[in-house]
Amino acid sequence: MLVNLGDGRFVEAATPFGLASLSDGRGLALSDFDGDGDVDVIINNYNDVPHYFVNRAARGHWLRVRCRGRQSNRDAIGAKISVTTGDRRQLRVVTAGQGYGSQYSRVVHFGLADATRIDELQITWPSGQRQVLRDIAVDRIIDVEENAEFEESAAVVHSSGDEGSSR
Image 1 (cartoon, rainbow, N blue to C red):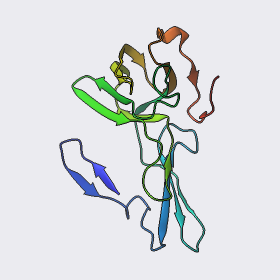
Image 2 (tube, one colour; image 1 turned 45 degrees about the vertical axis):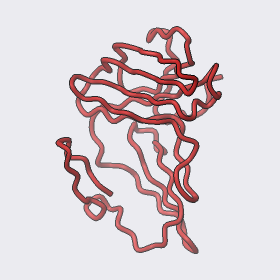
Image 3 (spheres, rainbow, N blue to C red; image 1 turned 135 degrees about the vertical axis):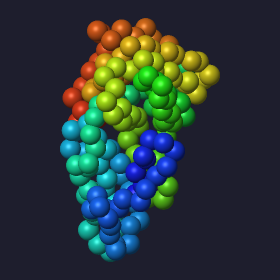
Image 4 (spheres, helix red, strand yellow; image 1 turned 30 degrees about the vertical axis):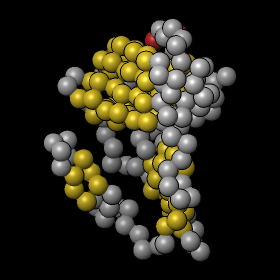
C-alpha cells in the first residue's frame, strides 16, 4: 500500500496501517463496506480465509458518485468523472472490474481531505456527452443520470453505506 503525500511523492505504508500479510492474496475488493465514508479492503486468499481491513486512517471529507447511462450503457462503464476542489483535481473511471478475481464498486469514491464543497464535477460519458455540475456538497453519495438536469436540492442522496440502487 502506498500513501499519497500530496506533493507527487508516495510512501510505503502497508505495515503501519496493518495491511501487511503473508497470505497468498488472489482477489481484492474495495468499497465503503462499513458505511463510514472511506474505502475499506477485502482480500480473498488462496486456501485461507479472506482478510477484511477496515480503514481507520482516512480523515476528511468525501463524495461518492453513482452514474446511470441513458445513451451510454446503463452502468456507465467507461465514464470519466473528475472533481475539482480549489486547485486540486481528481479523476476516476467507472470500471466493471479490476484484475484477476477482483471487483470494485461502480460507485466512484473521491477522498476530499478538508474541502467542504466540490467546485466542479465533470462526467464524460461513453457516448461522448459531457456533463458539468457545480457547487456540490460533500460527505454523501449522489446519483447522476446522463444528460438529466441535476439540482443538488433534488439529488438522490444516500447514507454512505447505501450501495443499492435508488430506482
